[in-house]
Image (cartoon, rainbow, N blue to C red; front, side, top):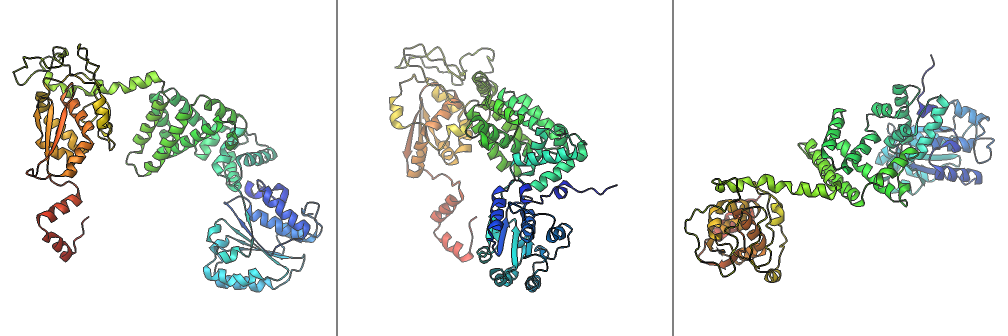
Amino acid sequence: MENFIVSARKYRPATFASVVGQHHITSTLRNAISRGQLAHAYLFCGPRGVGKTTCARIFAKAINCLSPSEGAETCGQCESCRSFDEGRSFNIHELDAASNNSVEDIRNLTDQVRIPPQVGRYSVYIIDEVHMLSAAAFNAFLKTLEEPPAHAIFILATTEKHKIIPTILSRCQIFDFNRIRVSDGVEYMRYIADTEGIVSDDESLNLIARKADGGMRDALSMFDKAVSFCGNELRYKEVATSLNILDYDTYFDAVDVILAGDYGAALMLFDRVLAQGFSGQTFMAGLGSHLRDLLVAKNPGTAGLLDVTGPLMARYTGQSAHCGVDLLFGGIALLTDLDARIRVATNQRLMVELALMKLCHLAAPEKKKSDIITLAPEVALPPLRKESAAAPATPAPEPQSVPAPQPEPQPVPAPAPAPQPAPMPEPAPAPAPTPEPKPTPTISGISGRPLSEIMGDTPTDTPDEEEQRPSTPTDPDAQDKIERHREKFLELLARERPRIGVAFETMETTDNALTVRVASQTLHDEILRFRTETLQLLATVAGVHGPIELEVVIDNTVKPARPIRLEDKVKHLTDLNPEFTTLRKTLEMEIE
């Protein structure tokens, strides 16, 4: 039985023409040989498995060939070429700097450099992983590298150019190797498959080439693994299974269900992915890359950035035609943000499922979006109707805990017999303009707009805008409603803005007006800054239909609000007793 040789070794290029994906390097080296313009030191740098050491060996063989052919290719027949092919050449020396990185190893190399070649014109020294040399070894190598004997040529190879000291870089001609393009990798693997009598399809080879991430050696290793699993016919599904990667179909199917707005199908698809042993992070990263590819394929000018070939390119182009640019941009931004947070998440599955549902919402038709948005108020309103248990079946007027109703009508034409506590109250039949829709926070059973929007840092209205609003009827039962829902309002307000919540604990209500007394100008300004949002929250919680007025009064007799933040507590203690600062300095106390 013959010994098996892996494809990376068996099909390792032996000529400049057979090197894959590095035409700019091979052309320069061939021209240098043809013109006799050989430098004494070269540095080959680039990612792993892209041909650095291979090109160094071909170059070393070519400059010693006794009968080079046209284009500076080796003849393969002379004594120098035969000795190189048979592994007995004394002109080409390879040193692994990863295991020979000491000063003593470099001194042995410099001693060896003095010996001229027995056959051929040059002694070539290939030092692989040169960045592993110690600082002392680099310094010992400097003089020899700068002024070597005329017969000596050094070729240094590294994957980490930034680790090499500048004095070494300045003494070398530097060649930067590129990653192997997917199309080049596919073409070379197809050549190997045809040579070995293996049937393959473009999708299988594309999958391998993209998984290799620009490394030809990695691609050939995965090619051998896939052949071992599939036999003499590479089938796309089996190749994906053997390499333990998600296939293209998974992401194409995911985008199809997202475009349909079917979050249930999206969750089931993700469940199947987890059942196959893949993590949520892997799925999200792959889906983000797929959306990027769709965005690139959508524009003919950028389609060249999509490094795929054959029928796969047609699939990307076809699906991208059904995807809106807003969906693709929003999806990429969402998944990029998720990728940064999912690594530290305690429940990765929930985060991925939430992202899928958001994507389905982004892609859903407008009708479906409106249906989703209006679900929240119906579900969350019942906790606010506990006081109306006497008549739950009809939208009757809210029961009064204080028995004295107002006998006289308000100056403005009165509303209907009693206001309704529904999510969107009907305007009074009077000729007044239609009242504004009530905002509906979503904390603690209140539905609608999130409280973070109501209590946002940026005020939604300015005083001038408020003055221009049309007048609306006041609620005759506003004071009673506010008093009955006082605790609920203070609880919600304290969650979002504790300082304002503390100040409102002593609020006074009269009809549809509030009076809040504070001890400082700072708190006075802060309350006025968020005045509109605070009153909107109160109106929603208490079910008040009509405007609510707020007056903030600075009263020096009011006890200052208890400090909330750490720095406020320190200032409060210092104000109570100035010696607190001296005590802190004496005891070297740190406030953390």
